[in-house]
Structures are given as C-alpha cells and as structure tokens.
Image (cartoon, rainbow, N blue to C red; front, side):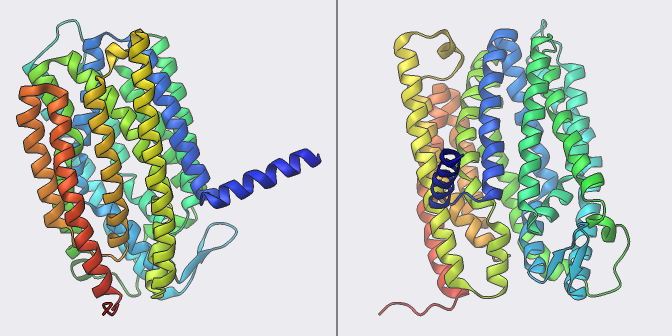
Length: 457
C-alpha cells in the first residue's frame, strides 16, 4: 500500500511538471490511443488491403476534409466566444447552466445561430462532396476496387457528424474540456476496435464509414443523453441580450473562413496530387506517412487546445500576465513533445529500413518523411502563436495564413508532380518556414497593441 502511494505521488509530481491535469490527461489518452489505433490500423491495412485500396482509403479522408468549405472557421469562433461568456457562468449537479442571465442569454443566442449554420452545412455537404468524390474517383478507376457504396455512406455519416460540431464547440468553450476529452478518448477506443474488427472481417473500404459511425455514436450519447439538461436552453429562442453576429462574430469568422478554405490545400492536397500523378500506391504511402506525422502533432497540441477556455477567461478579466505565463509554459511543453516525437519516429524508420522490415515499403522513404517531420515541428510553433491570437476573438493572420496555404498548395502541385513525395514535402517545409517568421512578427505586434504593453526603451 505504501509503495502504491509513493508511486502515485511520483506520477502526480511528474504530471505536474509536465502540465498534465485531468483534461490534458484524457486528451493525451485519446491522442495516444489514436496513435495506437493508427499503428494497429496501419498494420492491418497492410495485411488486409491491397495497395490500391490503401490509396483509396486515405484519399477518401482527404476529400472528406472538404468540410472546411462549409465550416468556414465557425467552430473556432464558437469555442473562443463561448469561453468569454462562460467566465460568468457555471453548471449545477445536473449539468444545468447557472450564473449571470445576460451571459447565458448571449451564449444561447450564439449557440442557436451556430446550430442553424451547421444544419445548413450538412445539407450542402452531402450532395456536393458526394458528387465531387464520385467524379474524382471515376477519372482514374481501379476496376478491382469497389469504392462507390462505401464512399456514399461515408459522406452521409460525415454530414451528420458536421451537424454535431457546434455542440462540441460550445461544450469545449464552456470549460467542459475534461468531459469532452474523456469522450474523445472513448471515441478513439470505439473507433479503433470497430475499424480493426472490420478489417479482420474483410470489410475493406467500408471501414472508413465504420470509423465515422463509431465516433458519431459516442458523440450523440454525449450531447443528447449526458448533456441533455445543459442544452435544454438552446432549443428555444432567448429573450435577453443577444450576440451581435455581424458585429462580434462575423469579422473573425469570415477571416477564419477564408483561411480554412485555403488550409484545405495545406492539409489535404497531398494524397489527391499523388493519386492523380503517381497512382494509388504512392498515394497510399503518402497517406499512411502523413497519418503518423499528424498523430505526433495532435498529441503535442493537447497541451494548448485544452487551455483555450482558460485563455478566454483570463482575457475577459484582463489578466494578461497569467495568460502569458500559462501560454509560454504549455507552448514549451508542446514544442518539446513534438520535437522529441519527430526525432524518435524518424530514427525508428531509419532502423526499420536498415533491417529491411517489410512494412517500410508501405510508407514514404527517409528523406520525404524527415522533411514532413521537420515541417511539423515548425507548424507546431505556428499553431501555438495562432491559438494565443484567436483566444482574443480576433483573426489578424488571415493574409499570412492564406499566403502560406496558397504557396504550399502551389509547390505541392508543382514539385509533387515532378519529384513526387520528396518534392511535396520540401515545398511544404519551405513555405511553413517563411510563414513562421511572418506570424511571429504579427504575434509580437498584436500582443503589444492588445495588452497595451509599453515598449522597452
């Protein structure tokens, strides 16, 4: 018993030093679970899918990310704006909202408009993206791959998932981060089990739809069962003060929307370019490599994303010193984690390649993987700056963001067309490196102006 208590004290101390509280812990559990799921899924995809099916599988999700065209950055705005209102609210033992009636009224008005927006987005997404994908895959068909029905079901389930985005964003902004992250952890377990079982049973490309269905099921339980009392106010119009959508929300949203549209080229252009110019096999290797790199990024971002409601609350109370101290601490941990993970992953691939393990022929080589990992570290630094700026309910980086994404998209197409994955990775690293310096300058200027900091003589 004494040894157990000592172990718990050591673990608690280590977690404290690393900034891991319960909300971060659950999100890390979800992220590490996701990495475990990625690893298991990658092994099973290699085992139970052909190279062509692997290419279709990862390109499916690249096209699904077209949802950025209907999101228009609103989810980020909801998290930031609701966190400012939540500074004056709380929940009781039944998860009903209590506190300042004016803040509650403004929160409800924000949520109702968001629900209408994403409901409309769902109705637009399903037919438009379904049709775009159908045309795209028919341009370079692989006769032995039956992709049509799995694609249509995947698009439909993703459309329903889009309608759930505002609920999750409101909960996150209202500092229900621990519960949201615990749900994400459970979603990861459900998705991983469902996908691995589906692959084992020979579901093939249907596992893409199975993955979305598993996550959607847990999300529906969270919103309509566990938080039914929380959202009760959102089902009827409010009679109190309301958020001025065009005065308070739209100025930030349209900028985020523009950035989100072009960000699609940054995050989702690689697989379609490889698929179109170099075939399904190369697209599959690109997809599985980017999934590993993305796994590192989402783990490292856990320290930042869980603190967004706290950032908003500190800004509402103009407690800028505590804001800066918290942001610097979690950003340092985040950057250390992704740098360590990137180096470890590249070394693991190096040893696997030297040993001639069969798995290495289903991922990209050492050069493009190394370039993508280095770019991910730089991009993490950029994201830390971006989270800080957007917590102020402002978006001063639209021009920089659009320029970075357009530049990346152009180089991925030009260099990827000619030199394949290595060219695409080099183009991304070049642009994100220049962009990091640009956004760093914006961050320094905005911090001084917004917090009215006197320049050092």
